[in-house]
Length: 177
Image (cartoon, rainbow, N blue to C red; front, side, top):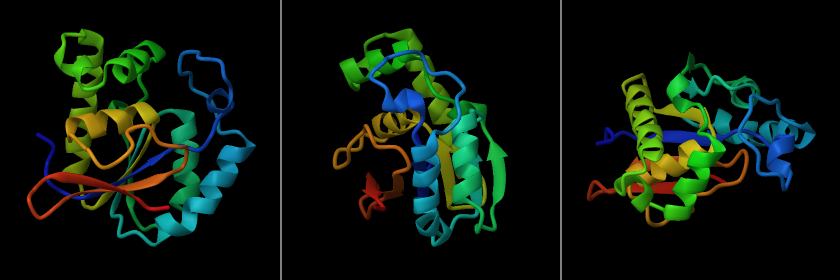
């Protein structure tokens, strides 16, 4: 079970791979010009959040996004391998099968979602609320783990999201732009 503490999430800015119709495996690539622009445009929103810790994927595009969006935050930075992106095969199987991919025995999907589960809980043990700077696959897995029903599981680049438990203890997600 994910710890019932609020946190923020943002997917990294755009890369040439995101902008392409090519469906290739996720590599360690930098942001493109649009990605840098997206990160700079969302920085004032991130600066206004009560973030105490920033947890970031070790991949270049996430680290570049983090550097831009966190320049005015007084927060401790943590690089977390558990927030690294999934492979294209896992992404395809997850999004094709939905939640059943986790429960139906696709071991590579289960392993990825379990890695995300551990990473999110590790982040939630830090001073909070934390900001997670990661990837689309991480966001999808978080939504799956929390059984989010009122929010798109696939999000655009540099879209900040606030995850929080409601009064009944159910997870909610709210886009901040």
